[in-house]
Length: 502
Image (cartoon, rainbow, N blue to C red; front, side, top):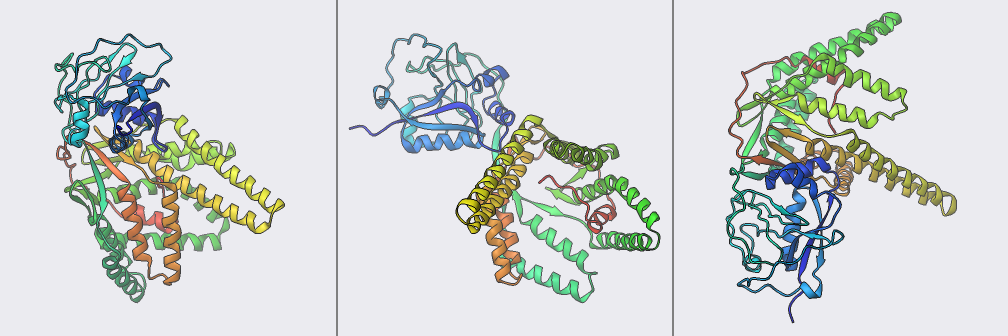
C-alpha cells in the first residue's frame, strides 16, 4: 500500500511580523518575476505550489517558503491524485481549463540539493540557474529558488504533462541571492572575566574607568557578532568617551544648580534643552555609527536637525494631543528616521513600510491587552482576586513579548541596504521566557549571573536575524574616514535622552 502523499497550499497569507510588501519583495527577488505575476499569488485564491510529496519533503518546502515570509499549509493529497509518479514521465493529453472557483496549481521545480526521492518524483532535469516565472491562463506554474545556485527558472506547462525541456523565454541571469545568518559566538564564562574587572576598576577609580569599561564591553560583543564569516568592530577611543562624559556631567550639575537658585532660569534652560535634544540625538547616533565597522568599512549616520525635531518633539507632542492615537504613526516615523539615516560606507539604508502595517500591528497588541484585562476582571469578581492577578500578570508578559519581538521584526524586515535585505524572526514567547529566566538568574546570583544573561540574549537575537545577500558584500566603498565627538552620546546618557528602534 503506497504511503501518504502531500501537497503545499498558498492562500496569500504571510508570516506574522513580516509585512505583505516585504514578502512580495522577497518572492520577487527569488523568482525574478514581474510585479503582476507576484501579485497574482496574493489574489486570495488557493494555489498548490507543490504536490505529490512525502511528509519530509513537504516540511522541507514549507520551511524554505517560510524563510521568505510566505505562510503555506501542508495537506494530504486526494486519493485520486495520490499515486506516486513513475520514474519516467509518460505524455498525457493536456487537461481542459478548470473553473475559476477551483484552486490553481503551480508545478514547482525541485530545489537543488534535496534528497534523491524528491528529485525522482518530479522527473525533471531543469538547470538550477534558470530565471523566469511564467503563468498559463488559469493554471499558473512556478518554480522554487535553488538554495545553492540562486533562483530557478519557471516554465509554463499543463499540470501532469510531460516536462518542457526548453524555456519559453530567456532572461538575464539573476543575482545570486543567499541567506547569511548573524551569529554570536561569545560565552558567559569568558565575558564574566571582562565584566567583573570592569566593575571593580570603575569602583576603585570613582567612575573614571567606566569609559574604558564601555569600550571593552562593546568590543567584546561587536567582535563576537559575526555575519558571513566576518566580525563587527568597535573603534571608539576611551579618552574620547571620557571627555564627553565629563562635559555632560558638569552640564548636568550646572543645570541643577541654576534650577535650584533661579527657578525661572531653570525653566528657560529646560525649554532650551528640549530644542537641543534633536542635536544630541543626531550626535549620539553618529558617534556610535562612525565607531562601528564591518569588514573595515565604517558605518555613519546622517540626518537633518528638522527631521530629528519632528521625531523627538513634534510627533510625540501631537501624539499626546490625540490621546496616543498617533502612536503607530510616530513609531513608523521613528523607525524610518533611524534606518534612512544610517550609512554603510557611502551606501545608504532604506526603509519600506506603511502606516497600515503599523496600525494593524498596534491594533492587534491593543486587542490582546484588552482581552487579558477583561479576563482578569472577570476572574477576580467571579472566582478569586489571586486568579485575576495571575491573569493580569500573564497578560502583561504576553503584551510585553508581542511588542518587544514585533517591533524588532517590523524594523529589520522593512530595512534594506542597496539590493540586500534583512529578516528577523523573534518569537514573543521565547523572548519573554529569556527575559524572565534571565531576571531570575540575576536575582538568585545577586547580580553575578548578569554576563550569562547578556550573552544568552545576544545569542538568541543573532540566531533569529539573517541578511538576504544579493551577490556579495565586498562591493561597498568605504566612506572617507571621519571622527566625531562623543559629547552627543554622553549628553544623551547624562540626561537620560535616547532614541531606539525597538
